[in-house]
Image (tube, rainbow, N blue to C red; front, side):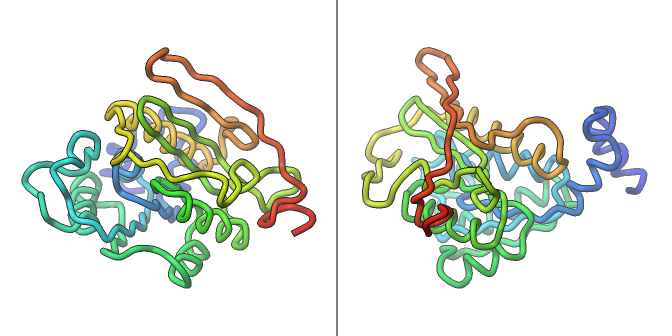
Length: 249
């Protein structure tokens, strides 16, 4: 690290859990963030600020006025513009150290598998089960850590999945395809700050996973109820019959 980086990351370097070695791991890391909306916004901003060396983001949407209530990467000056391009510009302004690979397209199929194979960590900030299942399967196949979160109305949840490791569940151990209807913020609404809470926690789990410190949410599901201002935790078990990571798959 040069002198400017030592000053930029000084507050990290003061933490014995991170120090110079941990900060270097962040600078060397490559992370895919799936979705740059309500959850993706704080995740991307905090990871760029933290010094993650390379961020990959894919988003084929443009900025709409209804996004601005919660998607803090964007403001009124970029209405109608590409989310991917606008996000990349903002992230580079936050931290020039961070290389941003931004594509104004939907990440799916071969491109999804190729990208996940190239990165060190995946963070799923998408808003539909189809994408979540596809990302999870690719993470298991490519043996990548998946940090996943969701928020709707005034409730949120997050966990860390390493379904490729013995005894640990994957996302599909928790949710089965075709068993859930996609509820979205568009149809059900969402509290903006609640999205920020879960997004910040996702970024925290990502930094811990990259640096290799603390206890992550592997095997645990953290639930957040904004109305009661309460966190609850559920233990997750691997499903032996899971078609993605189970012993019988």
